[in-house]
Length: 514
Image 1 (cartoon, one colour):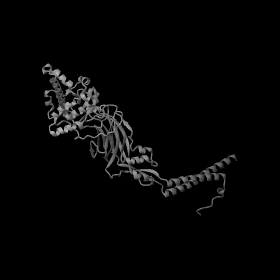
Image 2 (tube, one colour):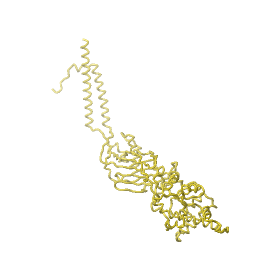
Image 3 (tube, helix red, strand yellow):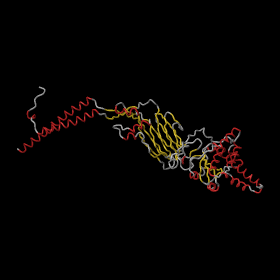
Image 4 (cartoon, one colour):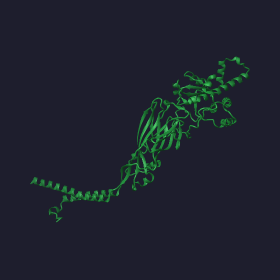
């Protein structure tokens, strides 16, 4: 027979049997409920696979970065990858000037392209050598004469340049022509005064006449070579060459960044003069007349010049010598290939001073992929997903990277990993809004540059070919049935072992006493 009757000695009830049976029932019931709950619930699982999200060969890079000490007119965004590059990217990027207190300006800065600014005056065909034949009208300053000029001249216009600056060489004839216009105007004023007062020319020496011309000049046009006097330029915070800065009563009042023509320079000086002189003390209107006679070549240019007087005088919005910053925000489509995102100082019309380039920055946001999908992940809690998951979508947010020494900049190394969500009810709400998001593994280091190389803030990224797939995992019916049978069989076996052990112990104890 397959099943035989149980011996009568084990079918008799006992207190120990009742206790063990109750313990077995409680254990089996508890395990059965837990097994049933696990069967009807789902868990979050992960798997590694090739990144098959290749519908678009490009991916969106999102950023909001504040350069703490880099003006917007010099802040340039470049993108390089192994399959191509884009320089001076402007599409979908917005720039906002930030003052020295970190307050963002309400107006948006424009991005000047190469054809926006005239780098020299085409109305000045003479070379700098030809202009210097009758002497230099743009006075060269030295370490001794610069502080003297600041103290003794109410209006001082200084061109800071270097010997190896190509843009400075292009500007040199225009700058000398500006000095000549100012000098000619001053001489005209002095000559008219001499005629009105019946003073003969032989009553003045050449030095006295020159002193009188400089005294009545509305502005003293000068230049200072930063290659020879670097301490002065460093003290003035000169970042780019050439820098054309006007000083009023010894204080810097703004840098000129417009078209480098004599007429526009004179118009800008007229605007500065109007801000700091009384209406009856204005002198630049006379200079405008002489500048127009020298540079305007036809009737059409004369009409343009007249309109320029009332329309196109530049306005210095803030003092650029006091550490201006720039907030750059937007997005760029980049190739799904190893690449670099760069923010650096660059200007078509200037040579950058490498030692004065400070690329300290604050990262308000930096991520890859759809920003809407990221916000969706932040607003909803995915069961089984840790809080570090959302943080890894933009790990650099709100981080500050300050360079403490010259010739330094931060390099950020990023590993970008796609996170895909599979099928299942657990991902239904996520899949509609965020099918794929991108996690970032980030490491930053401070790099030191050679003295002649302009530093650049760099984000080097690599899109991983391996994607992490998040899957919905649940138990099959046969797995559940196997578990139930294991609970019953296991409980019976464990209780039998306990009963045998207790029975043996009881018999040994009885034989010891008898």
